[in-house]
Amino acid sequence: MGYEKITVPADGDRITVNADLSLNVPNHPIVPYIEGDGIGTDITPVMKNVVDAAVRKAYSSKRSVTWMEVYCGEKATRVYGPNTWLPAETLEAMREFPVSIKGPLTTPVGEGFRSLNVSLRQELDLYACVRPVRYFKGVPSPVSHPELTDMVIFRENSEDIYAGIEWQADSPEAKKLITFLRDEMGVRNIRFPEGCGIGVKPVSKEGTQRLVRKAIQFAIDNDKPSVTLVHKGNIMKYTEGAFKTWGYELAAQRYGATPLDGGPWHVMTNPQTGREIVIKDVIADAFLQQILMRPDDYSVIATLNLNGDYISDALAAEVGGIGIAPGANMGGSVANFEATHGTAPKYAGQDKVNPGSLILSAEMMLRHLGWFEAADLVIRGMEGAIASKTVTYDFERLMPDATLLKCSEFGDAVIANME
Ligand SMILES: NC(=O)C1=CN([C@@H]2O[C@H](COP(=O)(O)OP(=O)(O)OC[C@H]3O[C@@H](n4cnc5c(N)ncnc54)[C@H](OP(=O)(O)O)[C@@H]3O)[C@@H](O)[C@H]2O)C=CC1
Ligand SMILES: O=C(O)CCC(=O)C(=O)O
Ligand SMILES: [Mg+2]
Image: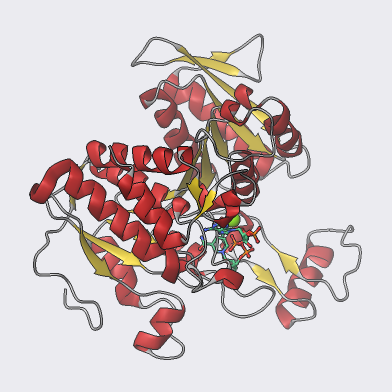
């Protein structure tokens, strides 16, 4: 289709998706990118440089990424006009060119428009937020054995209170819903019905099971020992509790998992390796202390949207912080890669922050394209830069004898260490 403000590069080709959701990746794929707000302007160009260097080194001129800028957030309002934060053609381009990457986008707190990040995930039905958490040797960490943390979070991305079904205190809608709940549903435990904001938390069987299926499939494909369902089902019985029940049900019905020692934990056989995969569950608060005390008990994590948000940053802290925490938002045929962190506005435009999170998100993207040699070079570059103690401020302040680098210089160091 024709785009108004997006320029489709003439020298690249479109990635296409087969019926079984595998990709046909041309040698010069067009990859849309959103620069991002705040530190997006610092980290996105560095990420692109690192990807270009890795691809060039791995494949010389045979392959390259053909970048195509698409707009969202503050930059969209400059390109399209003051009130256009998420142009329809950005969504269209991210569907037509189904592998993309984005910098962080600002969300106002307590007022203003809803999260653009969440809107992108919902509009494109990117229902699984996949966030691997692994340790790079030499990274400063607040725990004594950070190398024991090796998990991949599958965060449900389309439901839960992120659906944005909520009304402000004293609005006609809040009053109407509270009256309905009290008068027609017999609800007696809204402690202060006056001056009360109210939200709704939808969690469905279909939404849960498509997420848990992705997590179990990942455990199968990557020979992982367990999948843990993290929930707060003791309190939110019919949403978080149901997530647990539906998760076990899927494991039993689709993968033949059977109760372990009478349940509720289950065990199944990995059809690819013959090894056991334990399907277990844990209540979210207990999980947050156990990841500090016994992180090696956990491998693949499947959880709801809000839990996944909290867990992502908490786990990232164990292995160096959100400056190096990558992620991917995956749907049926569309994938969008993005850092775990936000726009860190106080550092915007200073060429200061760690671009590692977006670089590692790009590394996930290269793997998704099947460009494993380039992805491996990115990892080796990151490992080498960190091992040489040439790092950005977030690591330097915790690493004795480290050399402080700017954001762009860290990108250069990653490239220099690609061997
Ligand atoms: N997916 C997305 O686009 C996301 C967007 N957001 C949005 O971002 C905005 C700011 O959110 P905020 O809560 O401040 O969270 P941020 O993740 O933006 O920043 C919190 C802190 O994390 C550290 N940090 C973040 N990124 C980096 C980096 N690249 N390198 C080194 N350190 C980093 C900094 O810590 P220190 O101060 O210790 O140096 C920073 O002050 C909000 O509008 C929020 O909604 C938030 C999360 C995700
Ligand atoms: O959308 C936002 O502003 C925050 C999102 C977030 O924290 C996350 O995706 O981890
Ligand atoms: Mg978050």
